[in-house]
Image (cartoon, rainbow, N blue to C red; front, side, top):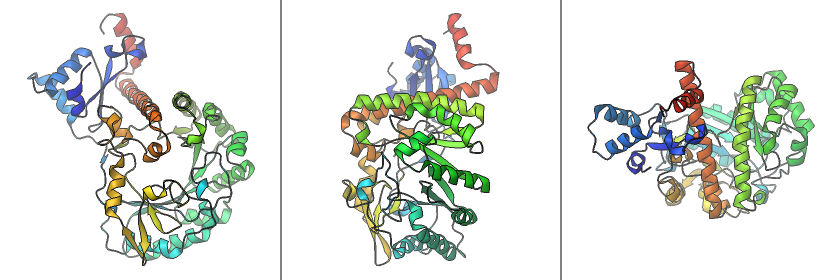
Length: 454
C-alpha cells in the first residue's frame, strides 16, 4: 500500500490485520502524531485519503477527514532548541563516587574521588535565576548521574538553600529532583528533602536476589523504602531490566503488592549496556520479551492497584523531533555535557558530548558544538525516520545508543520502538471505543469479519 503522500503530511498508516489473524493490510490504524488523531480505517478509506493528499480529490467528506488528521492537536510538540539558552532541564552531577558496583553502570569508567566545586554550581544557579533570563518553561533541576548524589548531601543542601535565597524576590518556577540508589537515605535526609519538596527516584530491583546480584544492599534499601513510606514521603521507584531479569516483571508487581503494599507506582526501564548484548539477535530477543512482559505486568498492576509505566515502551504522549530536547549537564569537572550519562574525561565519548564550561564563574557555551550535537541525530537526519510512523514519538533515537552500538543494532531498536508504540495506539483506540460504545473493539471487528463486512 503506497501512502507516501499521507506520510509526507505526517499521517501514517499502520496495518493491524494480524490482530485478527487476517491479511495485515486489510485493517489499518491511521495515526497523525502532530494532531493526536487516531482511528481505524479500511483500505478504501485510506486510498481516498491518499488521493486527497495528492490534491486529486474533491469529496467533501474525505477532505474533512484529511483536515481533521492535519489539525493542531492538544499534545505539545517539542522542537529542537536553536540555542543552549532555550534549555530548561539542568542536571547537576555532584561527584564521580559511588558505593555500588552495578552490573550495567554507564559511568563506571569515570569513577574518581572528584567532587564538584560549589562555585561551579553557583554559576549555573546564577545563570538561571540572576541573569535576567526570561523563563519559558519551569526549570527542572536534577541531582543525578556520575556518582551517588547522597555521598555529597552537604553540597545538595547548600545548593537548595542558595536557590531559595536567590529566587526569594524573583518568582522563577522550578522543580527539584534527585536520583539515588537508596542505600544512604536517613530519616533526617528525608525530613529535609520533604521540606524542600524534592522529588526523589530510587533505583531498585525490587526482588532481593536481583537487587543483591545486580546492585547490592537489598536489606538496607528495602528498610529505607519502608521508612519513607512510613513517613509519607512521596518518591518513585525505577527498575532497570537486564536480560536476566526481563522475565521477572510480573513477579516484581506481586512482590510490590506483598512486601511494599503502600508503594503504588513503579517505572520499568530498558538497560543501555553494549556488553550485555553481543549480537543484534540478543538485543532483539531482550526487546521482544520486554514489550510482552511489560504489558502483562501493567495489566497485573491494574488489578492490584499498582501503576506500572515505561517511557521506553509507551511514547505516545511524547511528540518531539529529537529524543532528547537538550540539557545543561554540569559535571564535577565544571564542564557542560549534553547527556547525564557522559560526564568524565575518562569516558570514550566525553569530548563529543561537551559543549561548554564554567569560566570565571560564568557559563560559556560553544554554540557551534551545541548545534552540532542537536543536529547529530534527529528525525530530519536519520534515514530510517523518513516514513516511520513512530518518528515523532521516538525523535530519531537516543544519541548515546547510536554511539554505543554498531549500526547493525539500529533496526532492532527501531522495531522495538514501533512495536511498543503500535500496541499503545491500539490500546488507546480500544479504550476509547469501549468508553463510547461499551463494546470490546477486538470482538466488534471480529464480528464484522465473520459477517463479511471487513
